[in-house]
Image (cartoon, rainbow, N blue to C red):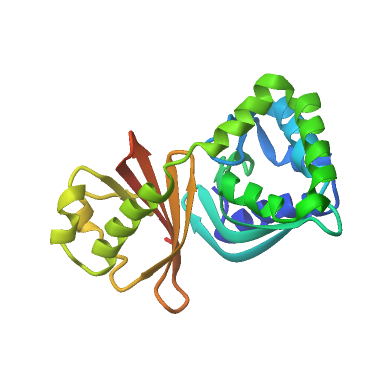
Length: 257
């Protein structure tokens, strides 16, 4: 597996290719069975043909600018805490808070790209542009149907289903107990599986690496809530909280090793 800097360089090639609309370069970054799940909760796109249609639908027509805040290399994954600026027209510019997770292969390819962002929030922002958004909306709908078909369009719409505010509250309660060292506060989370970096912990109470850290930027996408974490200095992490039937089951903390 490559060094930290090599992994960051590989991940950085994706927005660089997007910026100059280099579809061939962007596709070459993925393994042969590479996956894009954007947003998380929508249907997966896998393999060069499906990834090509994804590119043609969502990337090619727009100017997309990445504004990274923090990059976290954790094993074979890179978690980017960022905002995405999508310029559809001069009057329709969207800003999308996001956690972007790259799962990498041993031979320096992207096995999976998972974009954690809130589709309903983005649609509301889109709607706030008023009549200026209508032509862009019609063009997007046409591209969806042309490139993805009816089933693919419905698959994209599955991104509206999320654990929402209730999931965010559970994630916040769990992380508050962890960062405040409150064992009693973790009583309702005894069965949650916790992974810190590359290490699976014996119990949530064993998660002591985040004492005194603060939580911000809660994003609900699909069955997950992702949360930005900071120690108030140079330390940053992202917690990925997974839910099943509305209940928190797994927490993975992406932190520099």
